[in-house]
Length: 95
Image 1 (cartoon, rainbow, N blue to C red):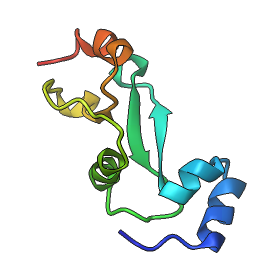
Image 2: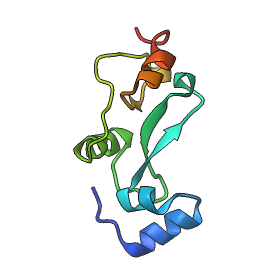
Image 3: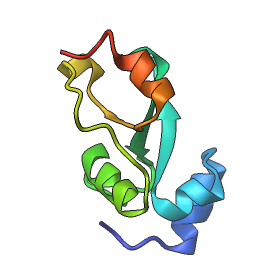
Image 4: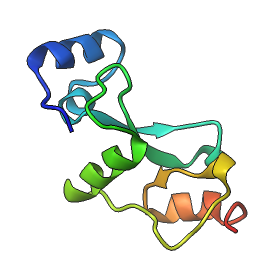
């Protein structure tokens, strides 16, 4: 994990991120895969984390619950937030 500077935060905000997300180096996103379930993703323009998995580890340390008891194929794999809504969206994709 790289240290986040104010310049990095401002650049990310300019790219459309919220200040809160930029200050963390990751955000909660809804994607085309996973039936629209919310997941953790690093903010690529900041490159604070090596990958999305490292960003998800930090998100868990920050108190965000991630689903660990459901497995997905590579196309639908992500660090999904552990919410009842996400579990409902993902139940048909679990393997």
